[in-house]
Length: 295
Length: 283
Image (cartoon, rainbow over all chains, first blue to last red; front, side, top):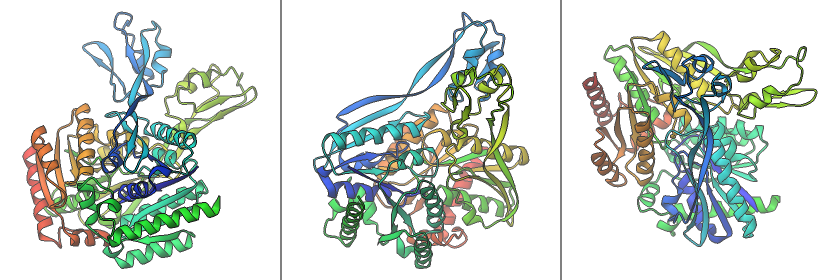
């Protein structure tokens, strides 16, 4: 089993449309993981049936038992997150600010504060188009710890892939460079970077590539909307040559991306014969060749 | 007045609206400051072209082990709920990247062997442009936690620009970073595109803002592509649509080059004017 993680740094570059196309092309030979748990979208393109659901618990919340509280204020004093407020002379916890660190609970002289585990989201396993399986998630509203949920989604996808003898895990990663994306990348056999020919695209690509280096991960790149600014595309290509990252496709600015997703289909399903689909299909073949030749 | 500009989905135009709205408001003679809180991937600076006046190192407080008086009792590891401390029989190992700076280990240590010390997590950069100031939070690579830096960038902006209109370019998503960026704002603008992805992520963002009890309005970017589902959703939820920015490849071309758009494209300028009128109505 080999894991391919598709990330972009910047949002809106076409990462999910491309990931869903790869998943559609590979069908039952892959398990799909949607690790963009903050704003998961792959299920919309792959017709996920949400056939099984599991609660995801992460973090805790301080709860004050008013009957035991003697209003000493020690909890408020030690809290570094301004999560304890005084309202009508009683101490109350601000659910959104509480980090679940336990400090208040430990120092309360009357044992009036208990820590309650919080449900932070849902994880789903779905049957999807082309006889494949996808693990995906929905983070709770205003919940924390998306990094841990990402790790859980990946783990579940890998277990399914191993159990059912699938060759690939195709992971749609999270944006940014912080905790969720670091979780998305862990254990990847190959990273596919999706960028666009804009100043932001190049800027964010540079940051993500630096991050990949710290984890010694091998990557290839797809430049989307390359014709928006051909000079920018040149700059991106030059940067990637220096970094020894191969450009496997340059895709044009094409509203088919939007039309396909409005029709709830991956591009390669929406119009299988189009130039765009042919290029995506060719990219996927190349990705598989690279990964098979390395392992 | 403090306005967060957010979106569930990335790439919908947060930075485009933040930078153009700031520059336009400033051109009207208003006192404006723009803060880029997308600290993992800050992009606003690519469009405002300011001069970097100075840079402040942003730290978070983490415990540093001092072995001299340590009795290796292990209380520090026991009280840390984030697995950031491992207590061995002859060494205390600290993982600063996991530390939430709650101070419990430090203050509950019986021998004061874990004083809290600053550790660098990123930078706050202050820029001056022709007629407004721009503050950028930039997280160091390898740092996992964006929230402390977002909080510090907001603090800096609040303290130094008490009477300005403050526009906050928020990070994408619906989890901790966007909550930190939005929770103290007077109003949150959610930017979306009229597609199923846009709608899905808008719904998540709206639910998040409901939990935060924020007043919200929606800007539909790339209007004309996709379908009507976002407008139908906003009507049903009684969320005001502040503006609809037309889908136009020339806008994307300006963006690609790192240019401000309103001085060049009339329909885009009209949308920015609509946003300004809406915000004036709020005051």
